[in-house]
Image (cartoon, rainbow, N blue to C red):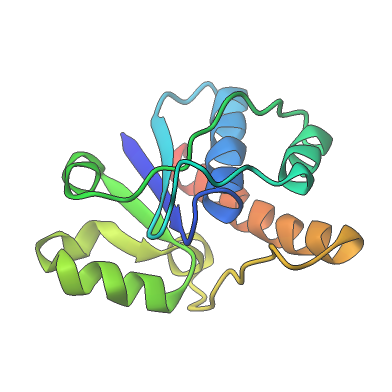
Length: 148
């Protein structure tokens, strides 16, 4: 199974979701290819230290990461594409409607809620960690659903 998480710049939400899901799958012994992309990613965007620090609290050491744009090839090769916001979902589906069944809002796929995972980039300290914990909860639900 090939899974892709998508957010705005591919340095925060989609990257954390990717690393968390890889971690949860490894604990379950489930094999899948998990990647992340951004609608507006640029290879010069650095991963914020708070993302690295949060992942460390989850016993995940982030290796090198280059933000990568979502492209047609990725959409074609993935079995499931999970996006953070309804606006992102709409933008992708406008361009790639043939792939509608496999492109989903993350929260809707995880828990049946149609809510956005808001971008925590401007948040600091406890507020950032709370937002990251909410993302983690949704990703745990995804792991349980897929690896069941």
